[in-house]
Length: 114
Figure (tube, rainbow, N blue to C red):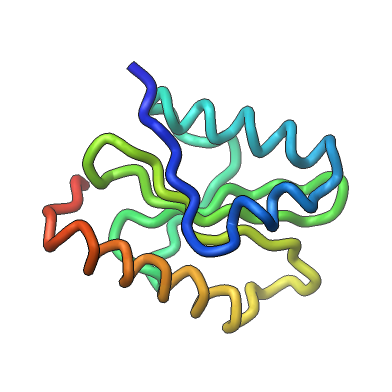
């Protein structure tokens, strides 16, 4: 059974602004996550919150999608952005963290699966 997607903040709008090839790859990677699989290239984002991961896309350009899939029966997309430098900007981390904290506040203090 596929987990449903829940887009937070402006994440969906941002992804819709990416070029078609990037949108298609993001769709494929999120579909893997919905099936309970891991993305083909990802990184844990403990600085955002417990259980948060970042999908990493390298061509064309550098794109990232930050999400959490270990809450309830959904995949929550916290933030998406095009990366301009090697290090993730503090602004992007703060946006994802704010959306994560708001999500936790809204759905209650659920246990996050390891």
